Amino acid sequence: MTRTTILFFHPDPAGSKANAALLGAARPLPGVEVADMARLHPEGVFDTETEVRRLHRADRLVLQFPVQWYSTPPLLKAWQDAVLSRMFYARPGEGERLRGLPVLVAATAGNVPEAYGPAGANLYPLEELLHPLEATAHRCGLAWSPPHLLFRANRLSAAELDAAGEAYAARLRRWIAATAQTVAARSRLVPLSAEA
Image: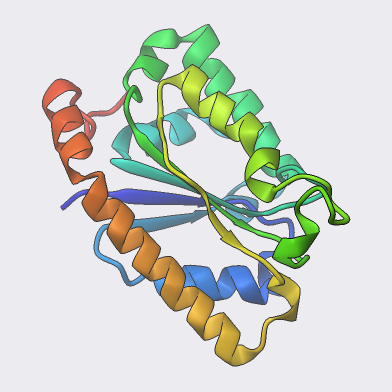
């Protein structure tokens, strides 16, 4: 079975109903592994050996987080600085093993979709605000997928949260199926389960 690794970056995971609904729907999917990065690294300091091994074991990578001031939470940026900088600058051979790894961003936002556009309060579509992550994926040779976005995250009813979780699980199932050939091809080229 292939492994889909969700790295969850949230400054207050216990306080997020929307992300809890998404993770609750994703966890039971076959091969899905969730790493709550705030719980694993409460001080924002990363054991890069562990994180490199986590990435090397992944067949697919999901970065899940709430959008904060048009960007990622600080913990995700700290992870990029510590882990990706090591893998792609200090020890590029480690990063080369990720070439072609499918990556998906799952982002929640508190505002309505209409706020993300030229006539809205946020001026730009949320997809455009995520371009720095897409550029990072490109630089690292990862296979970018269109992001999964959830709006009004802090205002959803219980029924809407359930529906959001179901939609996320369905998206993950489609994405896992759509990337199956890429994952199979990578596994023939790189021993993904090997230790770094």
